[in-house]
Length: 595
Picture 1 (cartoon, one colour):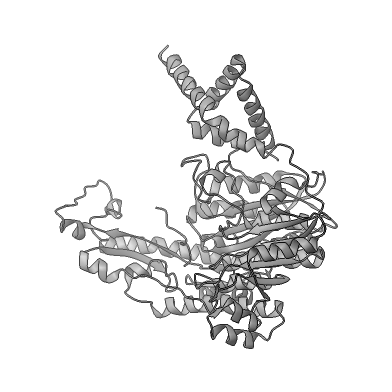
Picture 2: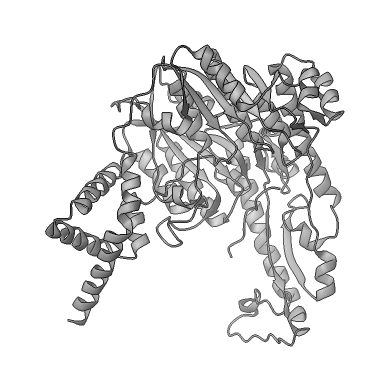
């Protein structure tokens, strides 16, 4: 009886939440499934890049409410549809004022070039200023891929170079008694250098300047080609800045100066009588997706964010906006694709700075199983595929990277902060007890490692590093000695990685699709089949409400009994979503985000 009353109380609480709060969320979600309005006959799409981008769409149904926005993958897929849509006449792009991830700019540039060449449609880019924030030269490169590059009058053109700044805490730690006890494999694995040193080490400085220089040269060489300028002359002109928008136009760095209203009016006049501006997201919702077909398919599986063990339903808030690669989900998606008779190859989109070595190994095992089953796996690298991100890519059938993808970082680090001395200065004493071997207390925060603990921990680091090298050597058909030369935790750009044999081709997602088709001997048009092993929207809703699957069913039955038309309509949408989502349709960090 007690359990029954608890269950009914839970159902009642869930019902209250369902009727009062959830209808609003679900109605908004269901609106996306409603039949959209038709696309106007003369449409100009407006793509606003000022709000930031993820690499891939979030699988979290609540992402839109928690800051999740547009993705690179959704943009390039929508542009592929728009370029052959007779109703779409042009594209207007609003550029960010600061920098953007270099590989993101590379991927979008490829999509812009394809839109212009295949669709024979113009692109107009408008900037309200370019300021020295992040990789602003990548923003300039993307604007240079447009048919016309506009800037707002009086705005600043400050794309003069690339800068990076790091804070070093060693002297602060020494002053307050904090000890950073870390092991690195090896000198280029610089994620924890700010805790260990007071300035860049020679290796840290060399690595940073190397990949930054590669990104800078690639962006400006590409921009020069698109604007039909001599690269050396363009670089000299840029580095002599900054300029006003008018000066940038006079020097041939951009095409025109005008307010966004000016370029909108011009584009609409050129697009034809009655032309209308359509928000990019609205077009994505309105335009029809190709009907699903049977027959051969290429599975598309994504992995964006830090790599961790577990699944998306095992913890954390479903309202969170952070992208995370859950090893159970990604491995399941790969195994599902392997078992799917229609799937002939897999494109694995990776945009990850790294994470858990054990989680990475679980995903890599799934990649190897797919290959063993005769299904090629082609990795498409996004913003970065470094350390753990490279671990899960290393034994793919082929790797395609953007020229400015940050990759490699074949290395490992781990350790702890010893805070005992620092806390004692504030009257806090830390003491530990343990049973068993001495290593049981190795990661206590009161004291640093003992010599024996340090030796054992260092041995653990050595084993992980050696395993990483072996996996790369096997996957890339390189000798272990060669891998050790180019490893040591060093970050490379895609362009550098190609020369080192760490990737096979330079290009974006659709180049990876072409590679997968070739490896699977597929001819003609092949459907792309998105697959992921994460939770369905209904499961996310259950977790958000904190009720079980049984309670959800009871709640649903109650809604029908009450005859609430809102609840009935919402439940219909949830049921449809569930059908669509049915199957078939401190461990040591391997790395940290790259600065």
